[in-house]
Length: 468
Ligand SMILES: Cc1cc2nc3c(=O)[nH]c(=O)nc-3n(C[C@H](O)[C@H](O)[C@H](O)COP(=O)(O)OP(=O)(O)OC[C@H]3O[C@@H](n4cnc5c(N)ncnc54)[C@H](O)[C@@H]3O)c2cc1C
Image (cartoon, rainbow, N blue to C red; front, top):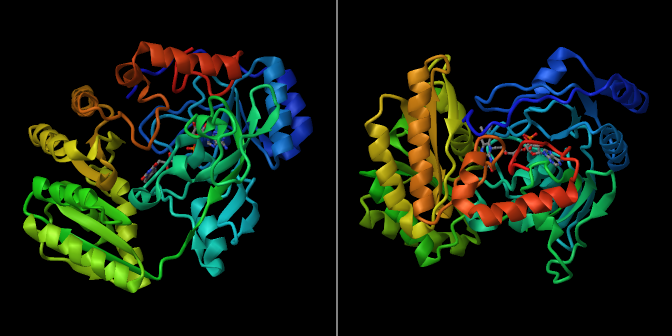
């Protein structure tokens, strides 16, 4: 939400810096208004804050030269992948130079024998999986958008597969990073485990461009499962659906995807994606494994669901049917927005310990049902993570206030359950206001000390994540 937004004090890039970058990059430095505007916005309602110029980098060394030039002039640097983040992450609230790494889109090495890959930061997740198609391997992390792997590392992204394969935190083996003074470091080797010193990889994963620019990412890969089966099952109520999830996780079924959509979200999906699901609380499932393994998982989950009134499973077996199902799920955000023409949306992103999930969603639904706003609940519930999409008229102060009020209640409830204000979208501008309540002042001071140590002049995406 707009509160928590740092004061807008642009440090305009001086002409000398623009000239220096122009001579380094030629046409790959743009000061065109449309390009700047496109790079000052993400996919959320947060106001646009264009950078002074956009530098389209092509190599780690070039990023280092750009950062060194910005550091000499004390000008902010905002890294940019594909701009699909949701919390004002890329807004250049203090002006400066946006470094767009989308042109750094080379897959540098695929090592099937080690089941890992090294890519430049601008490679997107779909591009990587397309490239891997003939190797029998895949990269599972799937935020709905086709985000860059550098951006996904920077936001510690996850998605529908995280319940089985983990998040970017578990799947990044090493990073190449350009620091705020232009030095280039590699955070780790490719060993699957290491006890060699502080874990710099995990420091930069989730740092949202505030500590350095990620230029290369080494990732774990997985074998494409022998059998994949997806399903949709309606439930008599929210509690029944969510309790099915909790029991599935507690039983240890290695489910690959288990996603909750409430009645409003299903209504929006039906209208947007031309599907015809029953408009009631629903779970989307996916099972990965050997034929026998999938059959066993299906049997266990069907038995658990039946105990909670979920019996009407619709199966998607072919690749085409599965893709249609997950395409509808991945478009849930835009489906929700389409329910109010001209409306803007923002999405809460809380995550709670799994045993508290049913209580958290049921209590939240009571709040939502008492409100006149259009809201929809969708979530990666196997991880305890769910989103409430609030759709409102940005020019109607009463609707904006109502969205803020409801959102604050969701966050407070999750924190009271020992959860987090953001399971995957990250902090950006929108979640800064909750970090003290979540971590406490002392822990936040430690984060600020790390920021000051690595970026003493505060040029890396300033005004985001942690105030200094
Ligand atoms: C429809 C939709 C569904 C989504 N669903 C999910 C979901 O299920 N799970 C999830 O986790 N997210 C989800 N997201 C959010 C979004 O896709 C992620 O935040 C994504 O990981 C951001 O990647 P990006 O390349 O777009 O980064 P950007 O938006 O370009 O940047 C995001 C942040 O990372 C920094 N950054 C980008 N590249 C670099 C780099 N190379 N080095 C250092 N910092 C960098 C930026 O400065 C910024 O702070 C969704 C978004 C949309 C629009």
